[in-house]
Image (cartoon, rainbow, N blue to C red; front, top):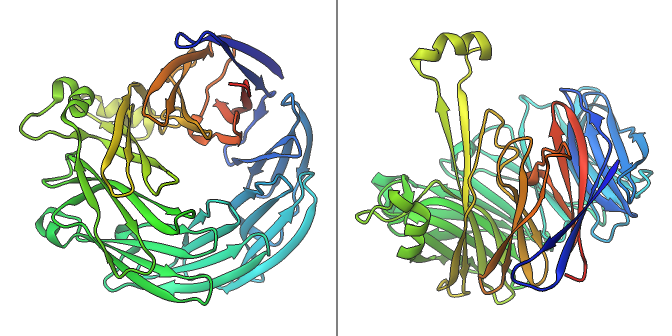
Length: 480
């Protein structure tokens, strides 16, 4: 365990802003181990390790020293962990998992206190026998009191289950089978509100030859009374380049922010925004072309005057504004697969025939959108990250949220000796860039995408290198 104190002098300010890094001792990870950061409960950071036959809960104290470890005795056999959710008040956490008993499959919910002691346990569903291993995905409500579990055993229909964590009850268990639906191709995203209402989004006709028929079908299920419905969102003659849905619990509607193209999927030409009223039958987004100067700034020498747009842009997140607008956060990322004939034999000998993959994660482009879909501001935060054959796990950024600003933390370069930097973005779209620290003497490889925020000024990140895991707590001066 070590402590690292870093003071940064910001050019835009006469004050000294400090960050404190607290690093845990190493844990050796087995190849079959998956891990997740649960959160900070009772002043301790909890880490869950999920192995084939063991489920280890490890607690780290204020100095990130390991204080205790427990082997959780979960129910049944062939356990498949679905989610581990910390209560926002810090009084405990829930585990949602599948287990098998007597050849039958069950959905289980357990509640633990911060000391890892079981407080309550309930079997929510007896699924019986699965014909095949179902695909599953879990979505959380904004306040993390509701979970939505999607289970797909046949690609033509999806079973969805909503769970209330506070009462440890199943809110509903139902199926969707839209006409001519194939889950692997047509399903886009699901959302669940703080009240437990479900939204299931299906994409239709998102290809060039039928772009005038392109639309979203938003299937709804109300928690109170179980009423179901479908809302049609017409995209006109635009194709979806990428999109992100988020439920606005303050204004009580579903929102979507996305990127569009009118020609092909080579580059995005602009963005769109839509608010989806649960009581409406149809909705239509508003569309905005990218500002020309922004496109030139991002594309540089590759800017095309004939076909202006931005290549390789992905919607990473969406921050909802109190007025019903949105801050849409996008990032440029691309993967290049290299497997030339000249190196074919070498690849077969050293990599068992798998191709080499280059990962590029570059500019962060942010758009602030007013409630009516009109542009408020936009800006670009430049970075350039490159790595090979690592799945891109050390690239991209972590978003630390506070009421007055957003911090984007990232590795400048993807290598063992690296500078960690941040962009600090305010509500007017203005930002500062700061270099925070160098990992040269710290032996850290930080996975920012897998971090968690545990306070308005604190986050915890995993550092993983050659099956050795350490946790890094980063704390900002609360006064800043």
